[in-house]
Length: 395
Image 1 (cartoon, rainbow, N blue to C red):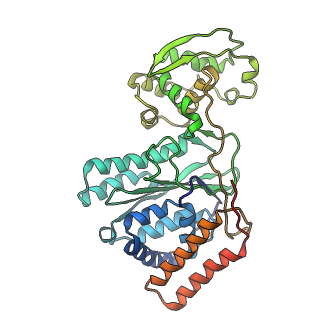
Image 2: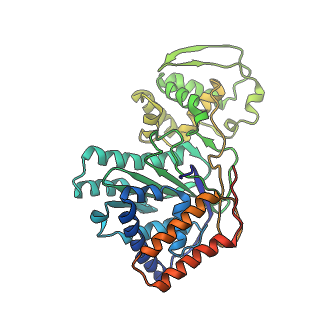
């Protein structure tokens, strides 16, 4: 069963030794062959979307359990493992770390042409890749900068995103998992899997169900004239003194914009006091573009080129402070886990899911074409991880 959410880890520095990477590639190739043969390519993609399963695969391939490097190295090893076998396996892995991550849509399109896949479906996959990256950088403002993005997909159209962000201030990394079966709506709670070492306070989470009204008002705001919108933006900068009027701006896209009665105390602790939205020429340029194009829904607003965290934050704050549509400020991470790793600190986990994952991994290992000695080492490593630390489930 796939849980929803985010994984958080300590940052790793340095490079993976060649001997270890080569070993991970060889074993990863065997594991993928077995899984695809046993369950099919779509099932493999679905499992990659499960953070606990992804983490367990990294353990099988001999990487630290809760190290941030697991994400980048494991993804790179799996991508190398299937090189030349993509057609036979029906699995394709695009993207990676840093500059490579920005080439993901082009890689998807390239595979689409090489495999003679339907152009419309290929374009949809590339769009999903771009949107996943934008959602986790702009709609979930948790202080983690995305630096790794990988996109797994099959000929049948199933897809999974595994991407990771870093927070240099607290020296940690956070991994975001998506799977196509869950992400039917790309901007409303689209993640597949929750596992976090820690949570963050005051996270603007525009993907939450509680942010629905704020998303609707944000969309309605850019259906006005640019001048009207900028009056609201300027109002935030001036920390508008008590307002004792109620005004209707009309019914825009079915959303009635109504000004609230505001008091000074509304602005003493609100994030708006720390940010001046009215003096950013680039923000004004993007807002003007949105008002000209008037996207028909929030997803199209987010997908608009140039829209980033600051644009989302500005519209969200106008929607909340002036029109009363409060978004969610709760971190979407809801569960936590770690099994060993460098600090040997136990964190809670879904024990049933974890035990089932380990049992499944053991079965796969037994069916791989590696030496019996190597199989025993892998199984022993998984059992050690399971026994060494107390594991519990929390909400």
